Length: 405
Image 1 (cartoon, rainbow, N blue to C red):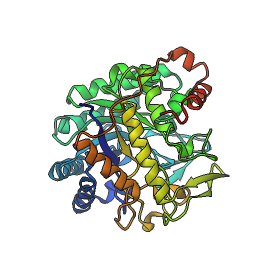
Image 2: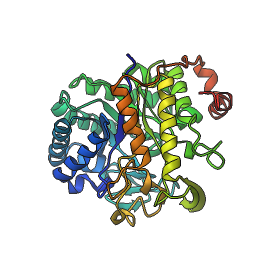
Image 3: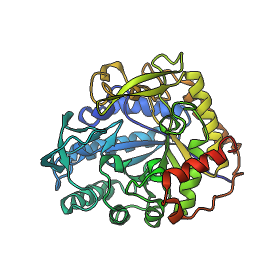
């Protein structure tokens, strides 16, 4: 029987990245119950780095205890959790622990850097090679996995969130070694699977990571892709449902391991009644960003889920649990990144969007063993040839497969 795990990325709708600073067990219980009601199996959560590790040699006991509460609540409502370390990059901003910043300053454009909620120009240490950073990362993994490595609510462990946006590795060998060291640290304490939170630039650019170098130490490969951000179609066909399954096929082929699609989705218009383009600021420039109607977004979710199953994906996690409450809209990162307010499967009033209904309906089909079986065979791709021209490689393959998945 084909296994297909359905989940969702989670921040509380009224707290977002400020969750761990204002933790509330009741809130988590209510929102995890909503996730369970959508028949989803996993919530991917983020161990916000500055909250979990206030100093390189110290892990917050309060944050660790709150994580234990999250895991216990998940078990109570019948879901599991994928904790993501070293966050890091989130929703168009890079959130750095103060101790990881250097005295040197530079404006490096997008994404902007924040520390303790305040924008900063200070540069950060190299997470992949700096001895202080590597030791701090191992310290955090040991503290978390040492306490919760075999907790029944842990689905898997995840390293960072699109880490090349947080800090681009200088060499793919650096990121491969980083992944190896941290995977080995997890396995001292936990038998649960390990993966790293990669995204489409892994396939379309030289972003410092490669799937074939991650695969030897990861149990499966994790992938993110958003058609609304894919340059070839973002202004002409932003809800093309072939981008995500094609990315799944390519990562599988280049890495030689099965793929979990741990992020996909779209930004909706505020009231979900229209599909439109708005202007948002990126590094001092205005760019066009697509927002979908609820109806169009729901259709997109249904198509992507069907196609991922036909491509043999391990599963799909929607981005994101909920639209964010208006009380957050004037705070970083939502004041600048307006579209990041509206990625939810649910609205900020708690009602379910068509995208959430699509996930629930597909979950019911999974439970009944009625999902599409794999019909698209694994691709045969040469890693070295691919990375001679990664952008062109993906674009050409997309044009070849467009409308055929």
